[in-house]
Amino acid sequence: MASDQTRSAILAAAERLYADRGFGDVTLRDIVAEANVNLAAVNYHFGSKDELIAELFVTRSIQTNRERLNELKAAEESGGGRASIEDIMRALVGPTLRGCLGPDREGSTAARFMIRASIESVPPIRRIKNREVDHLRKFAAAMRRAMPGRDDTELYWGLHFALAMAHHTIREKERLLRLSEGKCDLDDVRAIIDRVVTVSVMALTMGDVPSKPALRPVVVHGRLTRQDL
Amino acid sequence: MASDQTRSAILAAAERLYADRGFGDVTLRDIVAEANVNLAAVNYHFGSKDELIAELFVTRSIQTNRERLNELKAAEESGGGRASIEDIMRALVGPTLRGCLGPDREGSTAARFMIRASIESVPPIRRIKNREVDHLRKFAAAMRRAMPGRDDTELYWGLHFALAMAHHTIREKERLLRLSEGKCDLDDVRAIIDRVVTVSVMALTMGDVPSKPALRPVVVHGRLTRQDL
DNA sequence: GATAGTTTCATACAAATGTTTGAAATGCAA
DNA sequence: TTGCATTTCAAACATTTGTATGAAACTATC
Figure 1 (cartoon, each protein chain N blue to C red):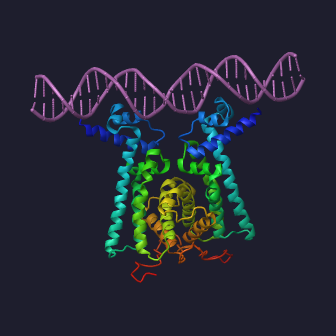
Figure 2 (figure 1 turned 90 degrees about the vertical axis):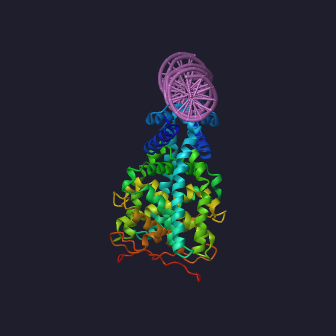
């Protein structure tokens, strides 16, 4: 068997099993059984279990990051060198949400794997995630160009909250579904992205805080009374 | 030694070690060494390792949930039976954020333990978290009273996003700190709570979507031009 | 088709880890 | 004290799991 076939079989089997049963429940013996290869093949081709997991994760991460940057670049070009804050947020959360949600998500091993990676956080993956900061800085820079004069702090919080909503939706989609008794449609990815982007932009453009986050409560209304709305 | 002393020593040692080094890195032998008790004591007093972890987590969870409900109740009483949406969100995210962030967080084993539990997600804890939905329903009910007429879907999304921002801030505080090069002050818990509450309320009160989340982009402005703001 | 390099395979290794056991110690009531 | 229940202890158990080994099978080059 060509060496690449074994390698690929291991990668595919590992991704599938990890996606289905999580990192804690899958052993190398499970993986090689699923891939129909010998136990020693994993260490021969990847060095160690952790390196196998790392390779799986970086592959998918690079994919997502590339999509993000492509969207960002497209938005900047169509905007004459400067993208709108809305487009930037869309480029940030869109690829991740599209990759992990949606009606076809059951079929996508890659998506389910990334969801697992988001939930379980195993050491080799954590190490890689720590390097993600450099990637996020590119978005911070774009945001700074889109909103010059805005305090950097506000910008980082906005970026942070956007990722919070996107990732939490992926991580806790089962709970949201159960809490809302199915009312929240997690298959309508477009609507979810719109929602996250809208709230993110609102968070970023609220109260023109100059430097100190005075954060005057921009609350639209006080207590509601019986006449409601 | 009175049996309770051994029990307590195990609980304290376990919480400390798990908080410091995570669930994956701490064995029962580490715990009993730290607690100065015999290895068999864990199984004698708790039945199994998982039950020990579960007991640690439920204790702290009950604590947080009680604080939340107390705040909610106080807000409802001072509001004549109906709390403002802002106060509800504050009751929801306040206790968690206060518990896990703040300058004294290094000293609070309980807080660091809960952060770990939020990051690592080990099976016994996951099982308990699944029951949290009932607790959240109480907040959904309060929100419904505060915003009658609002579509339930919007309400659930608002609740979901509030938790997203709170938990993500706890989970990823190190990354936010690094990304912002220290500009985001994660010790000013009051400001963080204000920020999360403000954005949550904005998300909830944005565009009076009647039923279908038409979600017309409530974006405040189009692309910025050179005159900026 | 011989040789060298690569890949596969069965098997063994070594270490870690949660759990169990049965006896010893301790506490407590009669 | 005696006797009974609870608690502690050292040691052993039983698995699981990632990794290493050395021979065999295979591939490709000369």
